[in-house]
Length: 103
Image (cartoon, rainbow, N blue to C red; front, side, top):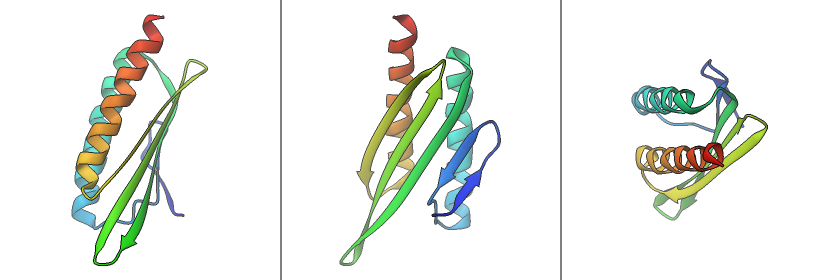
């Protein structure tokens, strides 16, 4: 699978989407990375997308892994819309970070 480095310790794996979608996705991820930095400096944020073709529909599978302060936060989701998947997975990552930092 193809891996893209966005900078700021962010890696995208398997994001084989069109150029317009990628521009929006990179901006979304950048905004969430900024929010994460308000809580903690992270070592790596990795998003991996797999595309499953189901007859005429494609289903996307997204896995997000964040390494921070010797801890990990994970989120997974499936659906058809990459923007909705990223938004929901990154919101869960933020909630998990808040929870782990407050302990």
